[in-house]
Length: 423
Ligand code: AMP
Image (cartoon, rainbow, N blue to C red; front, side, top):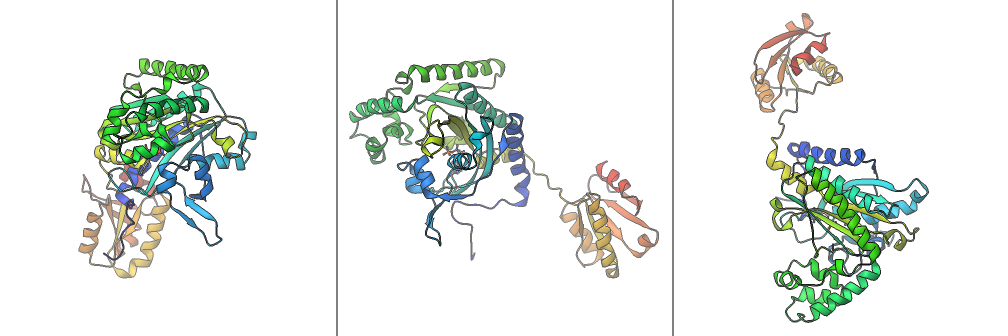
């Protein structure tokens, strides 16, 4: 084959459109029910934006960004995530002057140069929520609940919310020192990747996917033992909300996961992930948390914020297992019995389309071949256009699915046709 889609990317084909729409609809409708509004930012930004926010030492910035110098010499990156872009837009467009919090949601492609494997792509889609300008744990709960509602609509089973608190930056510093003390005892046993993390970002050792590290981390100190009173109260208030949700919705399950730190530099206090065991080791459906310092880091006013990002491909793949794809995408195929009626049939086709009847004109072939075409594309009916029909000012409709009767209708009364289609 001369060309193929680049590694780690894929095409969305017409048969899959319905599933993608369903997922998108679940996201958009839920976000709107909570008063969130759509925001769209460019798919590329100045590289410095991600270095400042996601963090220079993260895998995303170090290894996974598609970065290049554009023709004007500016260093540009395809966005690996959208929180940084949304915060940049929040500051640049003066949204802090509007009523806060700003409740925003986005949906679109992200790009990461990852090693392609099951559930990991180089171009993938995320739906995300950002609630900017409110410090209360009530909005942490709000975004967690939005995510839960989306997952429920999409019918995910065995979903568990993992939650933890990282405290504020001072707590994080103390905790990192404590972690270093702990891991220094095992330094020689840690794999190379985690030895490097030890120096640069010990918190990320907790995030390691290496079996030995996971084992060693079992007895590591817990963030919750090191966070300030203020962060503790914040966390306890969130837990009260979660307990309340568990009591009214028996499907909702959560657990405190002491190893959950999330990969990016900008999180503080609440961090969370929803996991589903049906997805195997890549089972994280969505993740998020509080990122109070971020807007200030980007030069804006000190503005607390919380949000999450959900991977759409995982939701789509899950839904594919449970849904029968609708094959019926055409209502009428016009069978033109004489080629001298081709011009007239385009007018009839347009008239039907004006009445929202999805119509295709069969190709210039024999009547038999035109009928075969109508059957092959699963049209609901075939409409015969011949001299006799036009002289009598009627359309002769043959139903092609469950019933196979033939019905004549008045060419001037397309509403009759619509009734037949919907019966
Ligand atoms: P993150 O921005 O890394 O916290 O990811 C949030 C969610 O996006 C994850 O839980 C995944 O569902 C999804 N995701 C992240 N990276 C990828 C990828 N390379 N391919 C597909 N989905 C991804």
